Image 1: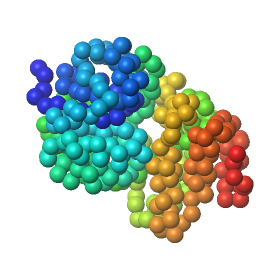
Image 2: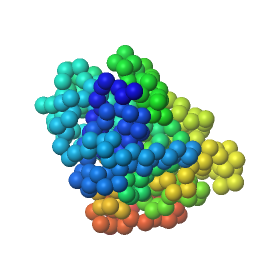
Image 3: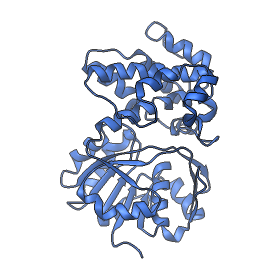
Image 4: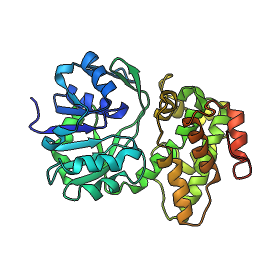
Length: 345
């Protein structure tokens, strides 16, 4: 039986189409707001959603309301914001004139400050932080694939009770946490791999199978962990291995890594980060809300973050038409020299 509430997905990219599509497949009333190209694609093909466990879900165009304008947000009981972090302020401004007081708004975004930005524009709404712990890739013609393990973790609130069973029936159970700050920073630590993957130009599994790329990730994570410690923030444990130990294990030999962290490599062979997609499609990435957050927190506690600053620089150079493809050895060398080398061209 269909639910008596409406859900609006504001920012129907990879995550928005996947989450919104699965909810629609579970007979929720879903409207999606996205770019014209996505609107046309879904209107033509519908959505075909798959995951690494074999799920295969078809959502026909007639089951979705898809538009470039957010008008249906005025009728929504739940709004899922999944725009890029850099567009959060704009999204908040757009929604401010539409949403009703008491509407539940969940930020399904990378970064640690998006919900705060939305609250500034939507003070009469229930705005909640969340973390989507898995990767979704877009394969064209309405096909979206979840390529890694994970759940949706959301700040706990009684208002979620109304929607919990629909998410569960859609195969998207909400894991509710009283304090999401530690979880958001733990996810950000994992996302420090995003620029490494983007600069490698290869799928995640291939990248993580190479020690020198992993050492790059470990350097970025250890730097971030030192800054988090100085700030009094202890990231949550999201994997079988604690964050500090994992950052060190990334540098061991391929043979040892496969033995002690096998689950890290148990991902779809074609899975890749959205940051790699951004570079290939000529879009601006979320680097300022990933590595940039580490740099900003470091400034607040009087610490420098040269590795994360360097990764930010490399991604921005790539965004502006500069070098995009780095071998593990080349990337490791430039990160080790961070703070001493000349600007990248």
